[in-house]
Amino acid sequence: MSLTAQTYWAEHALLDTGVEPGVVIETGADGRIKAVRRGAAAPPPGAVTLRGITLPGLANAHSHAFHRALRGATQAGEGTFWTWRDVMYRVADNLTPDNYFALARAAYAEMALAGITSVGEFHYVHHLAGGARYDNPNAMGEALIAAAAEAGIRITLLDTCYLSSGFGAEPNKHQRRFSDGTAERWAERVSALKGDDNTRIGAAIHSVRAVPAEELATVAAWAQEREAPLHLHLSEQTAENDACVEAHGFTPTALLSHHGVLGPRTTAVHATHLTPGDIRLLGHSGTGVCMCPTTERDLADGIGPARALQEAGSPLSLGSDSHAVIDLLEEARAMEMDERLHTRTRGHWTAVQLLRAASADGHAALGWDEAGRIEPGALADFTAVALDTVRTAGPPYVLAAETAVFAASAADVRDTVVGGRHIVRDGTHQLVAHVPAALAESIAAVRG
Ligand SMILES: [Zn+2]
Image (cartoon, rainbow, N blue to C red; front, side, top):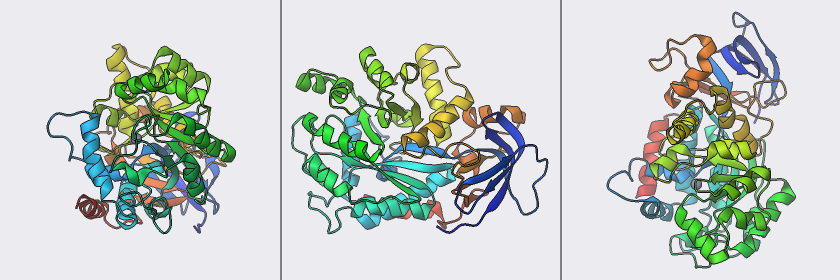
């Protein structure tokens, strides 16, 4: 990616000192922030103006891009997570490297329009329907990497090991294309994937259902050798907890701990139904937790103990997971609101703390430790939220972070800059011509 140096002038920006008016952000040809200057009342000559409040770029730490095709389609009638999963599998059956590329490019473009600068793609649809390998066994993962590059956002491809339908059961007919057979063969395939300036390769364990206990350490070792992020779905459903205790005599968290899976480079996604012992194991090992509040409420999962996990030592990140909506500001708001409903008290996190989960801590969970801050040396990834819309007009600028988190939506994002490149300019994606049309066409193609 070739770049030229660029100067941006943010009307307001969220820096480590709080919300500051008139901030000059100089970006270099290396895609990093060169200098940050406060107190510039007007844009310097040649600077690009960013109206509203400029925030560090948002990190969507948990995504399954193809779930974007289910939006609106699973809301009629009764059901549970498990009935929703049946519908989701029917879409997974239809994916090819070409149609998945088109769908992911459109979904990632939607993310850029929502201020997201990095996505953690928890990717498990690896093989042909039925389970045979593509000629290029990483055709699907590479399609997702290419899709993120075309949409202008960074990706951490969390290539997911998925071997079993549940505690020893063979994969069912939908799940065969997820499986490499063994963790050893998973590791062989994933080792051929390459990162670049825009891409990091990480690992994932789909869940304790989908990876037999004796295979967990192979995946953990692969990630550890490469100092790569390792993600996993954890205790989203009580049925999974019950089956795990029955099969192994341990909760999922304890099982993962026994097999060396937990640690500061590991992120547990959901962590909804935990025992006090689970919370201690996660917190004391420094394992991160990714909450996906809009999906958890959509799927009627329950409310996870986010505050208790953070107090125990787990950094928190946020993800839009099933993409019922793609709005990291809403995820941040929802984490606080869920905690309020659960405890009937307010004020568990400040707006700035919630934005930290949506940005710096999310980036760290994805292996982009050098993103998520507007400061010299950091990756030049930031996004501007308008303060003059019907949702955001009125509060003084000193309350701009509160306004962004507690009142704005993705629709208020005006500009997104990734690696110094102006990807979204005044609400228009600069690389993908018509994002709604790209979504409509690619979704129609995979829904058949
Ligand atoms: Zn997920």
